[in-house]
Image 1: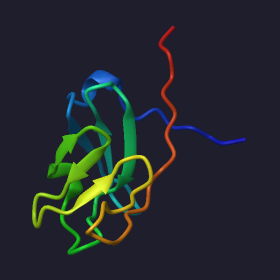
Image 2: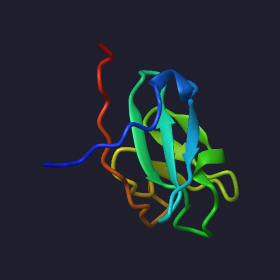
Image 3: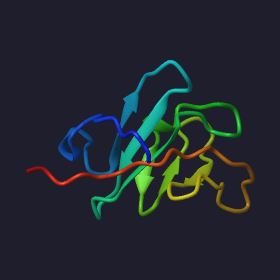
Length: 97
């Protein structure tokens, strides 16, 4: 069984924006799209290591602010013609009681 850690409330992530989580390992970027879906991945673009948390969220993708590489939020794959992958992190959205 997984041990989940409470990070933030969904409203702490702006719609079409992100929130950066600093930790002992790689920094994790949390993204929220217009449909209130939330995604988590390493905060490094596979191209040159740009901060994806500073990118533009559109649909289910984020565009790196450095060189415009587009990354799918659901699996971390670059969108053609770009190539590369950013590791994703599993998340769980919990209902408040």
